[in-house]
Length: 398
Ligand code: SF4
Image 1: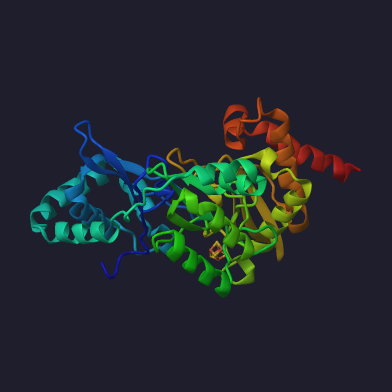
Image 2: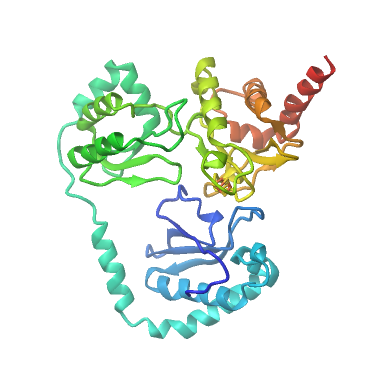
């Protein structure tokens, strides 16, 4: 597969909560169990973002774990044969699937899989065993967590961080820590070399020497004992890494955009910085609650704007930056491509436009626990369009 028609991306999630955007990848693999309790994969094919966003389709509801490598090879083989090489914009597997049809491509994959399966006589399972061993759970400590509970109750700064930046671990004494690289006003996803050294040291001291980088541009310490969390948090704060905003408005994904990328048609990073600082000044972030804003600096969609609850796409209109907004996108297990609101906004107008959308949301939600995405699904686009464009028209008229 050295000369596939174009690039090919595979995403895997081991959780019912899809945090890897599997439905927007060429192949998405979701670990599931069959009715007998055996582990395997749901296999999705043909997702992708870019200029032609598509949600992947399921070609196998349940693939036994032992069949994973031959099945993935079968998908790649079919793409290698059918994928278009005459037009680079149509060369991805999502277009192959769209043009061939799901039933036919599934038939071809299954046929190729049956042909390939006998060739996988055990080395692939050995490889999987080696990988499994490399990711074996660490030796978890058994220690009291009362100190954590007391600190959580006593310290509001720690509590705010714990509420947003910790995720439940399967071991009750442990937590999954997300170190936010989204301090308002800073470049989203950036860490200095000194900060990276601090995180590496903290992973060694408190995190079983394990850390991961998330596609949401943060750092994850997957196994931290709760009794270590106050000390970890204090060290993060000292290094400027204690921002308590994971999953909130300022936890924005922004691609490099015009600041660094030769393909960009507009800036992304400054838009993210201005949004984060503006809403920090308004003190509205916690009131607004869970929200994913994603920004791309061109149609290639590296910032995943199509699956942002609010997506922002920077375009070039006759030499001037213009930002198109999409609403209602979702990159989780319920993946949806966002809907365009209408005409785009100039650079200086994009932050006020997002504020109008969010004030409309605060006004129409039924209760504080109804998230932006839930409210959008309930009321649809119209109230947000009204908020966006009517007041703009009124300003123009004035
Ligand atoms: S979306 Fe466009 S501007 Fe942003 S990183 Fe990708 S290619 Fe560059």
